[in-house]
Length: 566
Image (tube, rainbow, N blue to C red; front, side):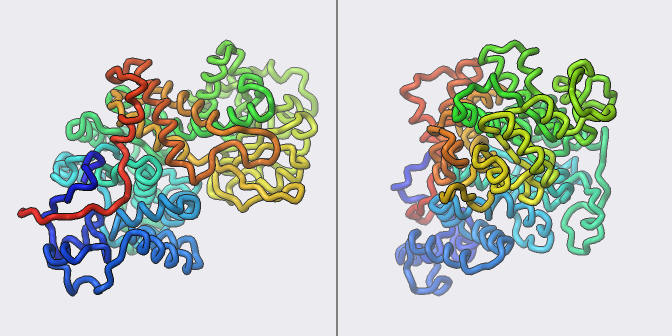
């Protein structure tokens, strides 16, 4: 099945009986008609009831709601995905706000932790170091002929829970589910990949049911050869595929992106997707306060590859808004575990250096005790308008810090983005209480609604799902040759202007989750135009763009089947 098929025409199918019912791409369950049950030897294998997609969605949603634990709900939905993908995606699409936290963050982290204990059916590819010489053969099977999007992880830095080894496969599976649910990418054209380089998680190595390669992680040249063998095999098999890197450790994430970004159509969602959704959120927040992005003073608390990736994109957007590069960088104060970054620190990573301050920059700061500058010192002395947390340190934005910030600026912008919720730098209700409702708040994980002045508000979740499905859709629609930084800038601006904003309540920075499919279309348009402006695709007329995008979008609907001889 492909997104280009006419859904009113019968689809030729060669499988029958149990083979048909156990193929998740073709199974329709009780929705098989009598004529199809005759043709495909299904009588007796199905109950006599004839259902339809609406009834099946209701049944499956009720089954999910009867479960009390989110992990059990996640596992139930994964089983549904492995048995009937059309029903799975129809359920997600119609109840996205309810289902998104169950199929992806925050629940997918728990799913990765127990992945080996519940794995029972193949999905995607596990490519382990001992079989590195067989990658071409693994990719060569005809079932992969139509692959257009790959998400790959090595499982080393899964969300906020670290090395999960082979259990990290839950992340590519979840990401690709969102490509299909939010951007209409046909699931038959997606491939999740776990690049198994071993694990340093001793609990996994000691677990008798662990499904991964039982070996400490390979490093250095060995690791690079494994990644390169995979990338080169992908290039040979699918020269125009979109390859997304996901949840690689910070020591590898940026350098692998820089190494391969010009070789094939690839990006790293943790670096570029995160940067775009945060930049879009901050752009909306700046509009809400009546100021511009270039007027913000930003503290990045957590200057890893993701935090600095956000900073790089924001700097670029400030430059486009009229600042010089030096003026833009001086609006940022970046912190890692050792405090404020300084340029005389010989332990700085290359990606941190653009955000390192000179010691002279803190001349005249009050209350400084010693060479290390902490978050409290910076807030007291620079009056930031934005606290951007990507540190994984739960509660780092303390009451004293947030109250001091609120005393200095009219509408502090507090983005507590670390996952899962326990790792968030502040709880949104606390931030609003401490600022008397003046703050504009967004989080990386879903939180319960907040209450302010007798009203209830939904807090925006700066989920990468706002960006990466639309970026992928735009790239595929115009068959872009590569994914550029400019495309993510275009995506961030499109997202930042997607809704009307004001300061009346914390939940007005991003579109509702229910509108993610529309958001993906909006971002795809911006990305496609940017690809054209950068000469990264064939030219096209704006009047044709919507049709080009829609031709790439699959919908979860049952097709009529007709028997085709094998």
